[in-house]
Length: 211
Ligand code: SF4
Image 1: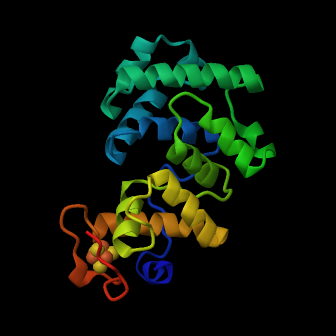
Image 2: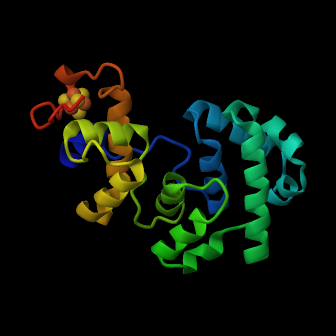
Image 3: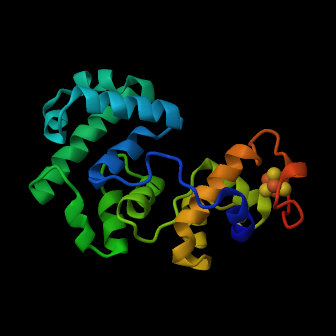
């Protein structure tokens, strides 16, 4: 599956979520991405960055004020409270508004730390580990869940977190990033949620088509 997708999508990462100089940017961006699409997430993140010169200013803002700048991401009140709380915890733990010190942790401990932050679930934590720290993790979003279940490599009953765990066990770590971005590209371009374009799919012959 990954070989076929690589021929079509070339492991090309087109999303701005894929790596930041400051991994805290990636963490906040993934918090903003919850329950919304990339366009709204990016608009909210760019607006937040335009309003506040640094993370300290965000931490000092009131939740209501911050909510106004991230409104396009949806659930603005909840997300603003979580972001301020995340910044408070991070500053308390690392004495700076940065999570670069997490690079000293092993990937499992890094993931555990991230999962303990408010509003950070398995996908968010795995995205930060993979994209911002370039360490092994296989985040599973709705596209990856849909394509892997239809193809037949992930059992229908598995949760996204369980699929992530399973894929991390069977795929070589060197292929996590490419595999992740290619399956998402395929879900967006061909294996649509409502009407998969099986006729034009490079996986057609090998796919179980569990729809
Ligand atoms: S053959 Fe159809 S169901 Fe299977 S991956 Fe391709 S588009 Fe999706």
